[in-house]
Image (cartoon, rainbow, N blue to C red; front, side):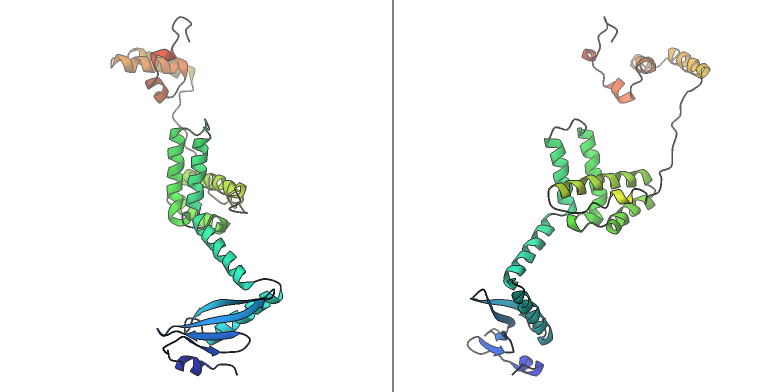
Length: 263
C-alpha cells in the first residue's frame, strides 16, 4: 500500500532504525535520532543499489515519488542514477573552482610565465586592475556560465560611472580570459566579441599639439630661454629631437647614448 502524508508525519523513532515502505522501491528510513530519510532501492545491470533523496519534510512525499520516477526512468534508459548524481556533483565542484576570477588569474600568470614581451610589469598591473573591476560581479561566477547579458551588466556599470574607455578595455580583457577558458576546456562560449557594438563610444579627447611651423619656432626659442634646472632644459631640448615620452627621457642612462656616432 502507498504511504500517506499522515503516516510519514506520525512515524516515530525507535531503538533501531526502521523503514516505512512506499511503492516501487521507495521507502522512508527513520533513525533513532528522529531523522527521516528517503531512499530508493533499484537494480542496475543485475546489481542491487540504493540512492538517497534527502530528509523529510525538506523533501515531501510527493517530491520523493517524483525523484523515484526520475531515477527509475534513468535506469530504463540505461543510465545509473547514482553515477549520474556523482557526475553532477563533480561538475558542480569543477564549476565552483573554475570561476571567472580564477581563470583570469591563471591567464595572467600564463602570460607572465611565457615571457611575453608585450606583457610588461606595467601591463600586468593594469590587467590585474581590470580584473579587480570585474570581480565584484563576475569573480565568483563559473566561467562556463558567463553570458552576454551578465557580462554586459558588469560593463555597463563601469560605463555609467563615466569610464567609457575602461569599459571597452574590460570587454576586450574579458574576451581574452574567456578565450583562454575555451582553449583549456573550461568554457564553450565567448560572448565578449558580440558586445563590441553594445558599449558607448568613448569621448575623443585631443591632446594639445603645436602644428604650425611658426609656433614650433616659438616653442624652441622658449626652451632655449628657459632658465630653470639644467637637467630640465636638456630634457626639453632632447624631446624636440628624439620624440620620446617624458618618462623615457627622464629614465635614459648614459649607456643608452653613443655620442661619437650621434645615436
